[in-house]
Image (tube, rainbow, N blue to C red; front, side):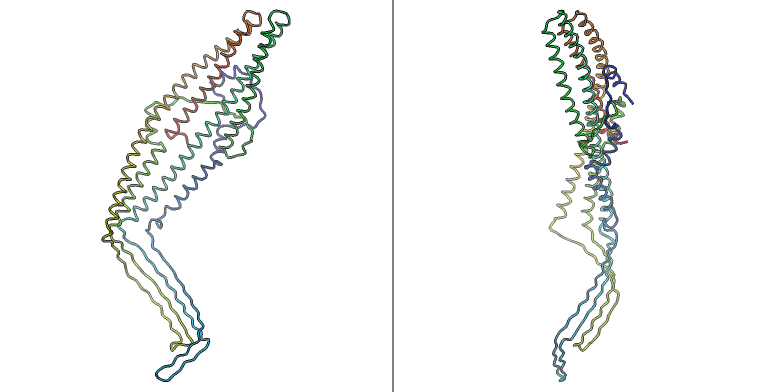
Length: 433
């Protein structure tokens, strides 16, 4: 839907039809979310954190190992016994088979396993937040790049409008020169101005192409894909400052990841403290053994059975190494706490700045709309006065320049307002709906 601000430009410009494929902002966002390389990589990292969040990785589940060993030998044997018996065998075969099953279950480790499990949960949460931050960063770039294409496309229309004014000025100057009502100097200057507009028009086409390439790159599609942006630059008024600040402090992604890092640091301290306690393991196993030998007095031997018990391990002294580790972990926790306060202050300041910039830009938009209307009326009067000889070429050129500058400022401040809105949405955590 056309924005009311953009309609003022439409009133001034002669808009040509475009044959390129239409691309809306929503389509660009959907394509970016699906294809953007950074988003895909970060989603994979988040998925890894989900996979790691299991009781087994926290050490809560038992460990079961099975071992099977089978050996075969062929030997030449000669044995003489005190009884006078002699065993002399060549190529005697022997074989053995051992199978073991061992179960170990740590039932107490100073509650370290519970801290580890909660830490894995917090790491999963941090992975989701990091993925969101990556998406927010990509969305901000996509929105800025999309509206840059809109901006450059609109500026091309401004230049085209100036070209049409130059055409009118050139035709009038030519007619006046041919009938002797004006000097050739005015006619030549009109040609120079027309050529200058044509040069700007061609340069702007290149600028549009470069802007489209950058957007296509963000969307991870063929960079030479041509399109026409279907949406106009839309900027909405922000909520009240208090509401924006409250939203930022509760939903800002940087604050969330800082809070998550603080919790991870706390749980890390809890993990290390758990090593001050003994570790108790329950053990159980089963063994099966079979052996046979052609050259032995015992030709076959079999055994099997269960074993069970428990193991207690307790480190009583390690040179105060654990104390140093815990002290350093506490220092890390303190650093994360300070970092959290720093980010809160930064988010508060950034919210206020972005909010003020958006409000200011919207006010300037209103002012520039009025200027654009006045400049349009002024250029129309200047053209008519030039046509009847009441205005010289220099005065018309000044009116034309004033007209194009007014439109350029309007387009520029509309773009700035939309970028300010996107920045505020990211800070307050509302960019992703």
